Length: 69
Image (cartoon, rainbow, N blue to C red; front, side, top):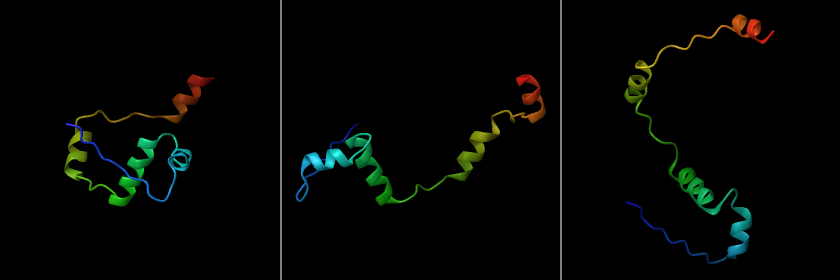
């Protein structure tokens, strides 16, 4: 379910807001809301459970260098 939020501009023109809001108005408003609410709480149990099911990454810089030669 999507809710609609109406924003009323009192002291700024719509053109000024659009010029300032990059890449688009929705992204700009969302970033303002995220900054005002602060960082999200992290559920570390969920993070560790998610990582437990994956294979460990094997990375060897020597193999990468040999393959690029």
